[in-house]
Amino acid sequence: MAVIDLPPWAVPNGASPSFLDFGGVLRPSTGAGLLRVDRLGSRYKAKLSFPPFTDQAQGRIIVSRLIRAKRMGLRTEYPLVCPQPLQDGVVDGAGQAGTTLRIRGLDRGTLVREGFWISVVRASGQHYLHNVAGEVEADADGRLDLPLSEMLRWPFADGDQVKLVRPMIEGIVDGDEQAWSLSIEHFVGIEFTVEEAG
Image (cartoon, rainbow, N blue to C red; front, side, top):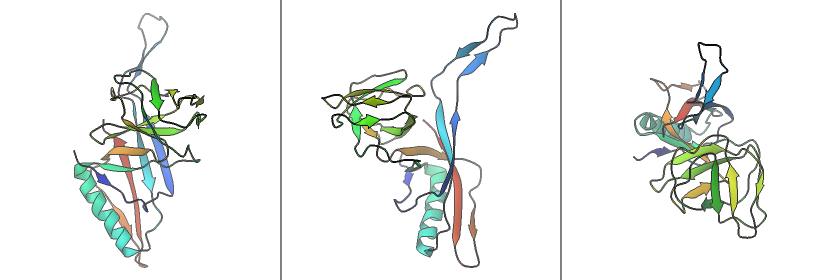
């Protein structure tokens, strides 16, 4: 499925991310202890807002892309609070599952810190956003076992891209309508929510 990409100059000035947890807690009627059940599929969504586009062409382009994204899906850069490593890696070995992702192709000593964000890209081009659960350092061969805060949602292929520099969030534009504001100064104000679909 082709998705709509926002242009690189469309940088949000505010974000309200949220974690959608598909696990749950079993509460026995007998008074026994609670049991946490984790399920595959937990993912992210983010409400993004943009500063007013003073360039009319830019505002026009964003509105056009958001209208099409309602039908086709949207991919945009996930807003980062702090800079992350200045290189990307690749998946090291096929068929991985659980909460650890093996990565290769990094420089020796590359440090990936807890709370960093990555997106893993399938061969189809679809991005899956993940959060890093602990600090790890690449070994002499540029490999590391990256702990994740949530379970992998797809058995990625060996060599699939791992985006550390510019992780992306990809999914559907949430809601039944898409609105934008036009000011008398001809500025265009935009905000929307994108939710991972896969």
